[in-house]
Image (cartoon, rainbow, N blue to C red; front, side):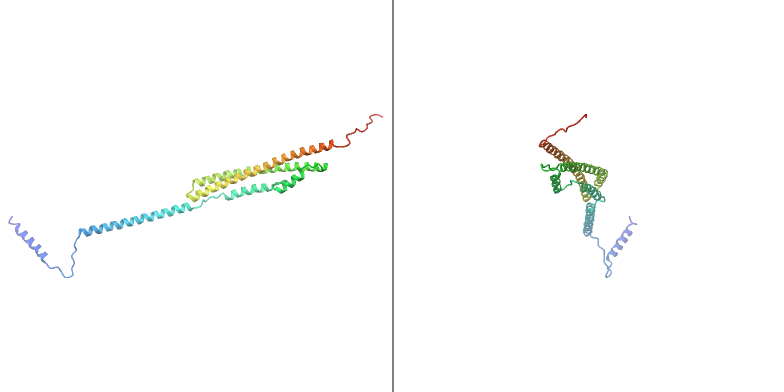
Length: 244
């Protein structure tokens, strides 16, 4: 115990001397303030959180712009040329109708000329009208077959377009692409309905002309029979000399 006492006394004296030394002029002492340090840490944390929120907001805006661009992207496939080609082919076939075509005034003139049997018509005129009616029916049936052939020829192309459009609609990346694929499918369906309408019109024209030809033929037969009965001088057998 006696040996340690001088050492402790010396340590206390040196410490007291250091604390009693005067501070140099202009020198600053660093003082640690726990309250101020905690406040600075909280401010830095809040600033970091705000920065993270801004980064997330920018990411959401970028994602929204990407989705808008995807929704506004156009469909890379178009069947417009094929649909227009099919419509043009059927329209051209319909315009090739001969003799009694799809014109109201022309039909009226033709029926007034060759499908109406009058009592004052000559026998030669009746025969010419009958021949014209037969030609009209034959031309109508030929045209009906041509339209049917055109519709059937367009079926493979329509089947291919349907498959392509269904595939494009299933792989659509956005709303615009899906809408465009749906619109093209509707256009293809409308084209097929147009083909069906044209075919039915051609068949109906042929059937109507055939029925009109039958009706006019019956009227002509009745008129010719009436003329035969109304003759003033009936049939008289000429004298025939068998043997001399």
